Image (cartoon, rainbow, N blue to C red):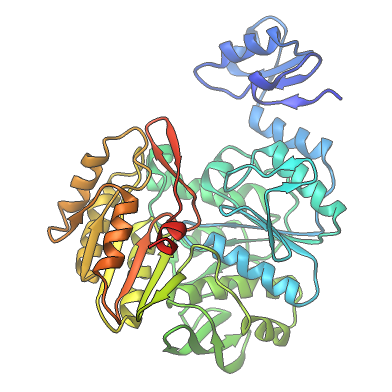
Length: 457
């Protein structure tokens, strides 16, 4: 069966090729021709080439054709955007649905969960290692989930995917915006462009009459969403929100609070989560579950059994009175929120191991160094996907604002040192990679799991 391709290398004889605009578009078109493309679409200057059909928007055409080829999808689909918390919110929403007897799935940074099982394949479909897959992979997954009788689906909408119109042909029942910080400025260049890419979920994809879940705690996000949508379900600590939380009590491994949901108060709810920032994720997921038709009492019952996502404030090992966690936080705000939460529950010293990624926003390095120096008692600066940059230079930039830091470039050695340094009552937190199982140096991608290194020491 002939296919529609957006990668010229994958074109086979008779395939249709949609050329996405780039500075190498002519090369891609010529490669597609050599590989036997029967039809080629391209926009702008490339459409003047022989045998090429001119179009207005190649990315949008790719989305529409992906939906045309794979037309089925779960009945209730929700997309979540925002800087932090998307994975946790999607994970919580799926648990609300499955606890209430609905067959559900979620897709994002960690992968694809069908009910409670993480899967790398759906029959012959491999799940791409992207927060939001390309148009054809996404619609193929949606169609396959529908054939599995999955009728509730929630997925993460990254700023890259929204800018590149990967999900512009998905029929959404609702959408959510978690929060906004500066991130991915290596791609979007400015915070404003990054924000506008996020808002495309509401300005270009979600029907303005469908529910939008957003917090009134963040004026810029709330005002941005309400320009395009008036059917708002709001959440947050601000009492003006439809969903809010009161009387928070932090415990060693849980949080107790009162929940206000659409005017009704539910008292003394205990959830097995750490960190008040997780309550924002929880309230966002409650908003999605509520607009999907779940009864508030079913939501409360499911909430008491909620489980955190792998790699998010996750306790990996407890030995000799020392607790060792991993967390995925890699933006300044998420990093500070996570360290603050650990600081609140640690009876002894807080030992923090972290690094910053190469070829990414460099402003985060000094910010995160300052935060670690302020909140942690012991700071170990190590490598975290340096990519094409010099690892030593990245570590040096972090340590400019954290003079007390200990520098151990080898992440395995950094983890080993932090554990052997700890005493009973201390908390060791290894930050930045969470669920990830690789480390990128230059063009090499090496096997590395923080969890495995912790368990081995």
